[in-house]
Image (cartoon, rainbow, N blue to C red; front, side):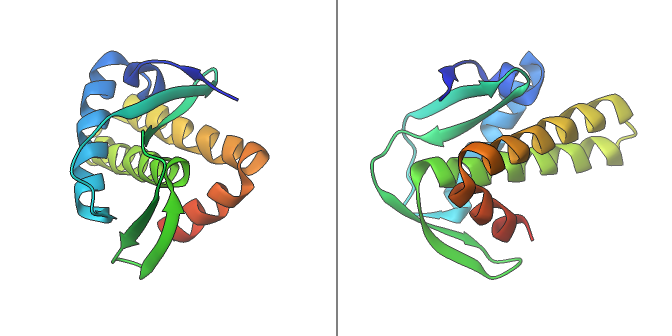
Length: 133
């Protein structure tokens, strides 16, 4: 299904990988009930497409208070939601700073991941759409 990779490959560049990874952990701390750190898988699904997810065989309560999303999801789905979310956060951040190149890069990564999820993990894709709505 996917292979291990680096956060730079997921987010588009090594410096974006460091920033993206730290944002994933920060958002997991806020949005995954009971999350207290741990090991994450970093995987590439297709060239230029990947995501992170917690290494835990459990269901997580994922909460996005901005749109009332509140569901139990598996680790893969939680990670996919958070990765798509963080790619969007990065894109908007770069846009605000006039960095069209990085805005485009992170937005394209986000769209590739969503498209991959629709094709290969449709249940996770449905959760992502509800999470980012």
